[in-house]
Image (cartoon, rainbow, N blue to C red; front, side, top):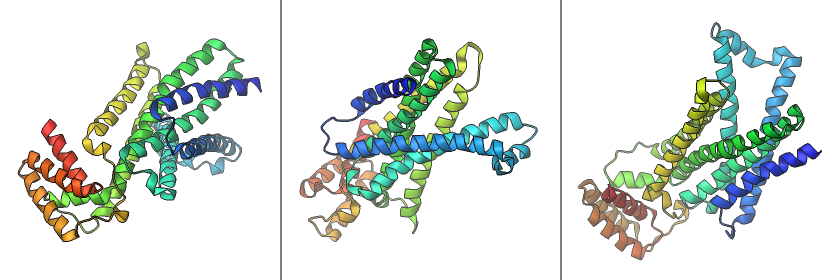
Length: 331
């Protein structure tokens, strides 16, 4: 019992520190965030439980071990391929679960995600909660397996608090960013339309689906690569150096995405937005801004977008034009 309590307390330390760093203490959605955190903790226990259950069941009844069939198919590279397949399977299932947390919360309360930052909050919380639940299991296992070896547990705490937790935050953040992009697909595609891009009939569904798939796939690849690196041994701990580098690269990539102006826009849900001007007049303004954007007259685009936003401050497409033009001017 003492081991379990110590494990929970150890897991709480990085969870509290990272949460304090990323979340505003007086945010009016605090109850929702807390609920997401609890939900994430439960899913971590469930997914780790299914991994353990799978091993136990297939040891007892080998005929249920469908992955053994794949193992036999990939001989003579079975040892390496089997290891890679297992790592990919477990890492991917964790990222998909974290994506589903953000997706479910958004579907139940779509008004909670109106900026990329909002999407990131839920994604990061899901990752933080998952890491918290996972850490409890790892710390408890470490205590039990080493009979409370303090040096081993301390090293495990440092590795998981600074490295693994940070990894979960980055991977979840990438998923959340692209989910946020997919949510505002209509407005982004409208910008593309008025700037001369040819759009297919099913462009909306395709764009939305591709953004989500890209974000989840990228997170799965980064997570898988990290897991492989921490489970192999290379000279001079090169594997750990590369593992840290993979998280750092993911962090830099996420920050590059967020530095774009569009990442900080506050969107009005497209299906709920009702403008003050009639749509035909707005379309004329969009068309003119699109022509100016294609002609690289970005200062003019900014001026027109600002004038439109003075009349319709919640116009998503005008916000995108302004953000994109500002990004071009800063290059």
